[in-house]
Picture (spheres, rainbow, N blue to C red):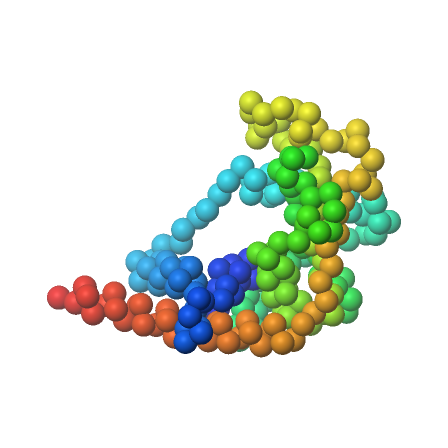
Length: 210
């Protein structure tokens, strides 16, 4: 049974222009890609310099969060799933909250305020985690740490070397309270996604029948 990754939830959560539809054009395009991957047995891997940095410095970002807030958080390695979604959050604070750690590419892309850090893609991802871990609060923590030398290349190093900046100025927290009505919407969208997924898989089979 198809389950949507929390990191991909925003792809299906956009509202369609027509009220008679459940899935938007963008959501349908995403589902069509999933159906193609399923039928042909491959998984599209998307990567970028920003994503590479996030993976390489994750431990440093968590260390910065601990330094600023006097915590002892560790990286979560548990993947959870329910009937609709699946995901692996960054930090789980038992019974209290989920923290999703983001490591901005440079000072230019670091959100210095809570308002600037609001992001619908990240919000839906976080809401999925809150649903899976059954906690009342989710936080996006933007942690600005040095970019690895091999990734900077020809960019201005001054935008990437940040250790000289006060640690407290390099963390921006964006909190979201759990909203069960939005979780109901997630369930609704996933159900619609499954229906359309099955239709596309069947369409591929019929059109390629011998």
